[in-house]
Image (cartoon, rainbow, N blue to C red; front, side):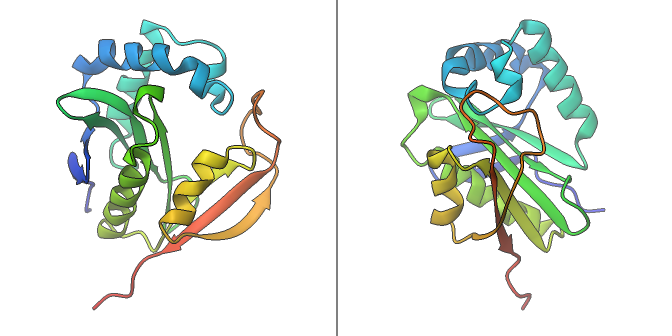
Length: 180
């Protein structure tokens, strides 16, 4: 079985597999981002603790092989966010998710991360990748559009709805490039 690389170079940032030693940096990044994330992420709407960070890192380590969670690391060595390739959309597909610390937005980090994750998903055998966001999250929706994804459907949310959401998810898809 082909597995994802533990480190990916993504333009201005590096994506690297989360490590247990990252608990403090993850907690700090999330705490500083809660106001930015809570409107869109159910897990952020309820606060975040050291135990949450440790539980996330343990779950990420356990799931490696079906879900690939990465720290988005900006120079020189700052945790600028998190991103994932998740095997939760059925055979042949991966969903890509991302969030960026508010001090690191508007620098192309999420776009670079999503592009690198899509390439990696195709390398390990996906035939398509998807990005899903609430229709009200315009910034998140700009990323798949910028990367050439196609909007394939709009549907009710699959997860708990948060305060910032309009309650309609937009699903974007990118097909694997033809093999040579």
